[in-house]
Image 1 (cartoon, rainbow, N blue to C red):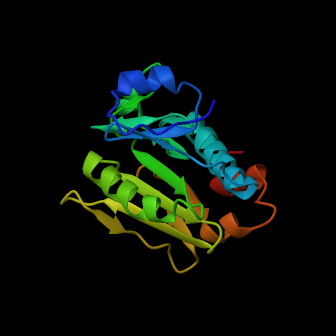
Image 2: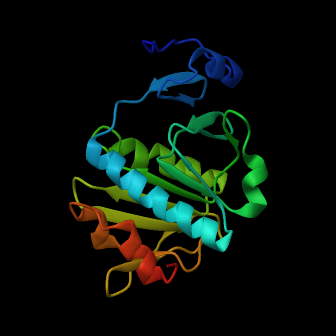
Amino acid sequence: MAVQVSSAAMSYEDFLKAYDGVHAEWVHGEVVPMTPVSPRHQQIALFLSALFQIFCEQRQTGTVLLAPAQMKVGDVAREPDVMVLTPEHTARIRPSFVEGPADLVVEIISPDSRGRDRGDKFYEYEQAGVREYWLVDPQRRQAEFYHLGERGTYEAVLPDIQGRFESRVLPGLWIQVEWLWQDPLPPLLGVLKQWGLV
């Protein structure tokens, strides 16, 4: 299905009907088509989502969703690459989308999404109350981690001196940032052994 962007504002309900199964976002009543992602982008998304999924199952700490699942906050519906909702917020999951903020969101930056992920989405997620935001840039080999502070604004959280970052939303889940740049990515079983889950 070809995505045509209309200048007329469209309700979210109409968007869901007209663009079911289409890789697009709904922003202030406009349809924003998304470009296909690279294989490396997809590999990192699957790696992180698999780790999150196993961790959450073992610890019973959340539900993991992948794009094209949508998160609707106000008059914006985005497709985070990976999102996690903790048990107290799983009621936000609707049949076609998530109503309200996820607790943890990961965006894997593509060349065409760099400004959107660092700009519009950064502020949208912050204002909506997404508690933890990961920005992973495979091309530049950079990862940034933000936690929602007491003032309701994002605060950068740096990995420790060994290059390890631990989630605050999912305590006990940590990654070595350098894992994200390895090719191939680390075996899941090896990470789970380091976490003590197997």
